[in-house]
Length: 211
Image (cartoon, rainbow, N blue to C red):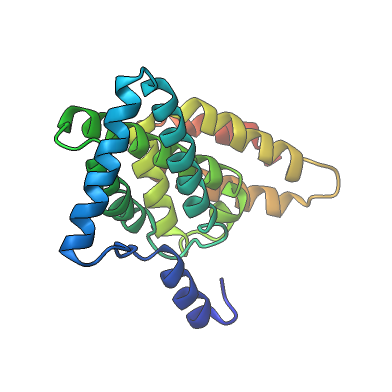
């Protein structure tokens, strides 16, 4: 991201900053919490707990997808820290109202949503890897975020498969000059070593033939 970088970065900050709770006054928060708790208790009592969980999952996962979509094309700054903070403060905070005094349920949802967030981020970045590799080292923050997600989701095989597919479709085609392929080969090795020091992802580079 080059032109108008400062203005664009400020815009992204506004989009992904931690959202403040809508209900600020303690009395309103208490009343809201009682209403949510009462509604959830009634749904569970009539055997609608599965419908409740399905609705919560659809709404919260959809919101996470929207947050991650805002990361498209932004490679020069860390984003996962803010995203995870937002999840903890906003989503988990809301779930504590839904499952009042049920820490086990809140903990289960927290783990599920955190995994979903990291998987979604890795998928989005997977589709942008040629740009991320090509712009390294300016994309170091983005690479660190991807590494964090892969370490916590074990998506290495899926990630490698998709990157190899991008390379085959966009680089290993007639008309691409050999020096460009060699540069991409070197950059790919550098980035894969950063993402996965165990060298599992280095097999991606084997699909680039610099000769």
